[in-house]
Length: 351
Image (cartoon, rainbow, N blue to C red):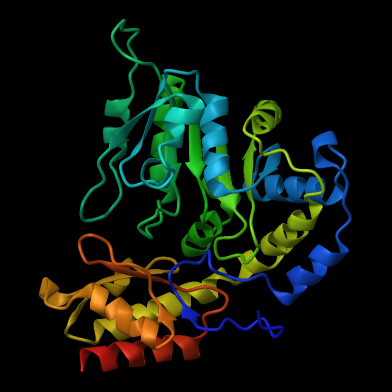
């Protein structure tokens, strides 16, 4: 690995590919640590307290990953055999390996998203909540949301408010997968706490776009987090001198979240440049955060051939979706000069 910490290629597969910054590497080497299982790691404590304050919650818990945090939330909120209502495109349904069945022992009941807006209707969420004490039906124990979504959309505060109204009406808590909540906050020109105000618990990642090497926080009430702490032990997520990881997480939250608007600007620039090419189908107006999605017009061009060509140019774009959609994500290590190289390579491919 280069000691200059410069990535060897232009990697836009995800914002999870980011390397830690020089400041993070220094903080890791100098971190004050203790045994976190005994509650003695001062850096972890600082991270949890700071993260909770950003989320507007009483407490937070440091865990290894976003998937871990989501599944820990389900495990803590839900009795076994109960049901979770969530939209059909969210991470918990699509990308967490069926863990909800294995760990929490719950059933997932999905809500279909609007195909144009890629956001579900709150009324459809309420229709899925089981309120009757029916012998034949599981009880709804939790509603889950994702903001920003895995399709790059940002749920407006009015949507969050509507879901919380449904939650209160039926006495069902809301958990939010806020892996990119700081991207959502930047897009909405608000603070993360304004979004999470409509939730009972939330998780957010330190490694997605924020450059920490790993780790996420689960936040909620003090009572909820204490129960989650016990369940974290059951799941094998209690770590020892994890302050070395938490030190990087503090920089992620204190510094890196404040620059996410730059990633959004680069993503919009990329989308606008791609929109100028007649062979590409893209709506730049739908680029709300750091995610860019596009297709080749009429599916006349093989997207796999495109990714192979780009890889030869040392540009990693990831594997296309089954419908031919290609996704690119901007992040700290992707600057305007890299965007220009990407656009140039796309033009070369099309030529």
